[in-house]
Length: 338
Image 1 (cartoon, rainbow, N blue to C red):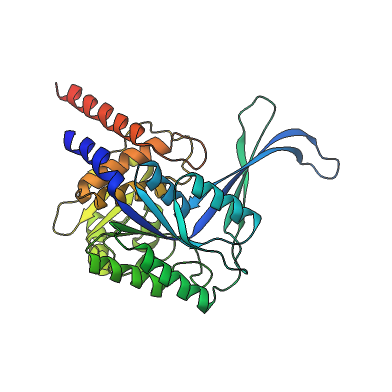
Image 2: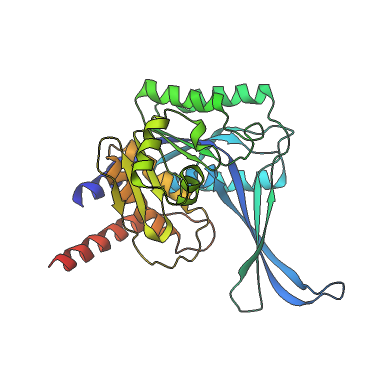
């Protein structure tokens, strides 16, 4: 544990992680149920407030920053109200936004979660409304993104690719810029870690990927085995594959190593899983950038994931919370062996 604590405290603040991907505005609209509408059998929600947080690549960047790392975002934000709110939140969270592009015709990707409840009662999510960019990203913007990526990666220690868009023409990450990121990482001999919601199989040659169980099932089928995962590692040219499995923990597959099952830490009943995958990849990449092994980095990321799912809304993990979780887990393991 001592080496891990020293690495987190001493190395995390020295590391620069570039986050390339879809910068999402996660909005939480809270309201109070006032009465039933006369127009239809539905409740009327009286709006209380709306909070904008970083989602997707933005959430990964905010988590790198909250853990003490130097987070640099490369992506697109629209020149709209949601974009202004997202940019303000990123800057407040100490994320470097110098390489974010704001095209005139781009709509900020926004996910609005409506939280409703009676006075003095717990507000629960009743619906989510997604606003997607519907305009193809033009060639000039693509070229600017590539130039910004090259500049952002100067002295970088790791790259995260966060690909949330269903259509690569409408989002940040397409094959061209992904291959550029991989090329830069190879030249600098730094890890590049991928989180792709829909196109994991499209990106060959990244260092590691962090899909959740559902995303792996879409590729390998519901009853996939560790052997199937190893074949996927070989097919995609990965050094490792970290499968997140909710309250079942994680599965780490490395080339030429025995698969590692990492049990979940903390409560088995999460409060809110929103953005947990972004927290995991942020911690995982920052740990790899700090010289930790895949197994050590996965174990630390497992703690971050266990912490963040016990928080409401899109959340982050602090260094203090991370170290406290590791300490408690180490003490519990020692007691169990005694």
